[in-house]
Length: 66
View (tube, rainbow, N blue to C red):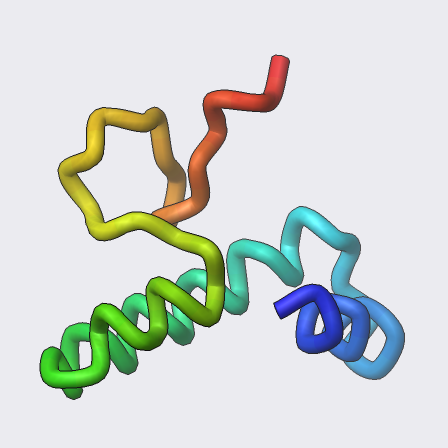
């Protein structure tokens, strides 16, 4: 996913935090529309399914920020 984040920063002009949020929004959307591949998407992004207790914004774990 870092490669996609890098492309969003260089080609679209997003900063890294914005690119991470954009990727998460897109992967959340795909996961909602195609629930049969939700687990595979989570594996690709290193994400966890919602409800894991970690503070999140747009599905991004914010527990390491501070």
